[in-house]
Length: 109
Image (cartoon, rainbow, N blue to C red; front, top):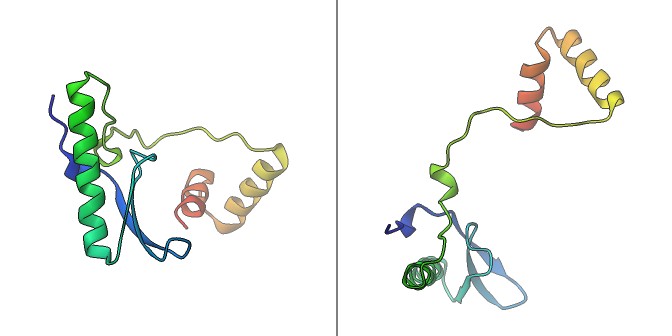
């Protein structure tokens, strides 16, 4: 199956250590690309990922799915100490909202 490299999570940031922009891809943490401008850095990391995917396909290796297209249920469980749980319930009651709504608001900050 041919993976569409355009759907991966790319980002470009300045690297003070290298004195250039560095392009990265979340799904391929071992890959990077350094260049002088953000635009050429972005193009470079996309090309590196495309080449990595082609190589992986040639070698029948498993290719990561893009994070953006993954199925997400909207549910997850977080374990916290009882004191934190209690304090959050108190905050929710004082605010007149459900515990779930309070937790969702705090997570989205």
